[in-house]
Amino acid sequence: MDWQALALSVKLSFVTLLFLLPIGILLGRWLAYRQFWGKSLLQTLLALPLVLPPTVLGYYLLVAFSPNQGLGLWLVNTFGTTLIFNFQGLVLASIIFNLPFAIHPMQRAFAAIPREIREAAACCGMRPSLVLWKIELPLAWPGILSAMVICFAHTLGEFGIVLMVGGNIPAETQTIAIAIYDRVQSFDDHAAAVMSFSLLLFSMLTISFTYWLSARSERTHD
Amino acid sequence: MTDSAIQITLQQAAPIPLSVQLECKSGELLALVGPSGSGKTTVLRAIAGLYQAQNAQIICQGEVWQNSMQNIFLAPYQRHVGLVFQHYALFPHMTVLENIQQAITHLPKQQRQAQALELLKKVHLEGLEQRYPKNLSGGQQQRVAVARALARQPKVLLLDEPFSAVDQVTRRKLYRELLVLRESLSMPMILVTHDLDESNLLADHIALLHKGEILQTGTPDFVAAHPKSATIARLMDQQNLFIAQIISHDQTTKKTHLRWRGTLIEATYQAQFAINERVCWMIQSENILLHRRGRPSNGNKENPLQGQITEYMESSGLAHLRVQVDKQLDTTISINVPLHVAKRNALGLHEEIGISLLSEGIHLMPYQALRSES
Image (cartoon, each protein chain N blue to C red):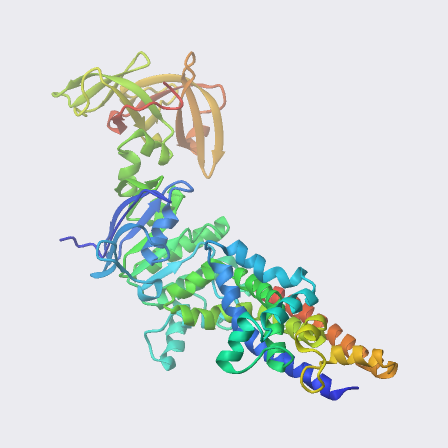
């Protein structure tokens, strides 16, 4: 078992969640309640990572953050840093890749709250921020939590985009999925099997947990 | 200056046409009545600040809630509104007590629970404080919604079809409770309903809304008996609506005479209509007398008509009849008589009967084409 790779994967998952939680809540809520010009286009763009092969997304990020041109060059000139082959780059790639997995369930969770309930809260004298805190978040919470669990598991097992953007640098960008690939390449079948089984077990637990949350949510709101 | 506690003016052409001018005094219950889609709920939402009409002025207890000319628009949380939603909109993740406490923002935290308990007592829900909404019956949920609306100490209480989601037995019980409760309430109350019986029972005044426009306001009895137009009469569920021609006005006897399908009808003096003018006329069922068979009386002489019962239906202690008074033109008059009267007179389908139209019950309106007769 490559504990260093596992620790890096877990760290990457948590940091990704740290960014995705507020982004998902704000964007999910905005998309659930607002009608605006270009909404369909925005939703299409946000859903792209669902269908795009991770390597393709990784390739475009690699090109975009290349220090020789465009955005990558600007980052180097402005901040003296780059976003490829390092942990920060992995975080950004993870966030982009996980956007639909975070936003869609949260959007659905917010949309499922009846408009009358939100309006009743306003008529009770609650400001919009208080309505979000006391009414919307508790009611949407199962959806938010299940989105977070899915994103966590997804980041933990992500391979293609991580390899493209981060490469395979131990302790820096070598996540557990890449470590498994590495072990298979070097014929260390036992290590690959242990790590694969760990990921399989974790994935099963994750899915069970989200199903349980969804069933609990239905029971509460019926 | 008006003594109304709330004054509402809403004007807009689109997306929902609105032409509304309403007033309601403290302690008064005004019912907004109209068919589905007439804009009743939109008006209520505009008062609560949940809908922003383009040209609006809403002044409640001296406070300007909306004035489009001055660009004033208070958000719902800034208005002291108590709103009971059609499906109650209770917070499903909070107990009954917590639901009510959410609206008590004007008291220090330590006093909120006591106030919430007091309100629960007022709506007869003691002992259910810790229940969640899903564990309450429809009637109990409605009471929680009322208590929550009152918890805010509202300057106006808005009720959006609050009885539509409960069964008939519960509804009658809730009517009684609301009638008792309103005695202790001093704010203006506005009830949205499409049920005329409900508005008759509960409201001091009604405002009839049709396609976003207030057509008539007044006491329920007055609007039902004196609609300004045949459209209003139809919306008030008036069954006996016909077209006639003015023949004469007799100042001495204070009577107006009409010709209706070859029959001369005598009505109370209504000289605003010219001789030979076509008019619509109506009569409420309670102004139609049934002739007692074999025992003629003086009342029988007043606009007497003979006809055959073509429809006979019994419900809630009343017999609902349709009497065909002109076979060739298939003209029928609707009458409701107490069931015991129907039984005593052996009324039934195809029976021939005599009726009298009381002249003081005949109300004339400007002519407009009617669907049932041209």
